[in-house]
Image (cartoon, rainbow, N blue to C red; front, side, top):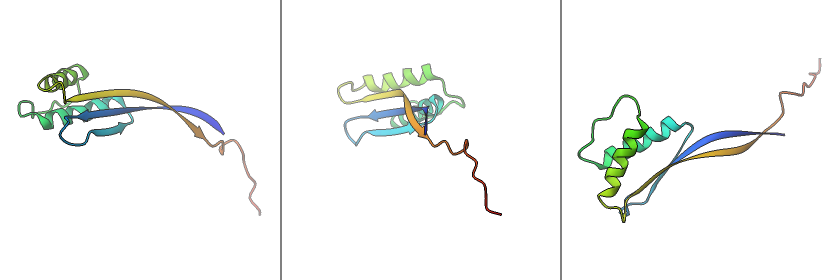
Length: 98
């Protein structure tokens, strides 16, 4: 077997009222987009979503949301490199019976 690494991103979002939301994404853009949806879903002020995800804007919105109740509200986007095993099946050819 061979080893490879894949990227994954987790989004952690909570307000102390309901269980925390944890999601896993295959790209940073997907993770920041998910955080954007979560923050906008909890805020009455920022309902409309931009067509593209701006990480700086999402960070600003998430921080504004958190600062309204910093003792209970939290968010995090974290990158991960996951080591995975990949079977080496492509390197071996098996002959088929005739």
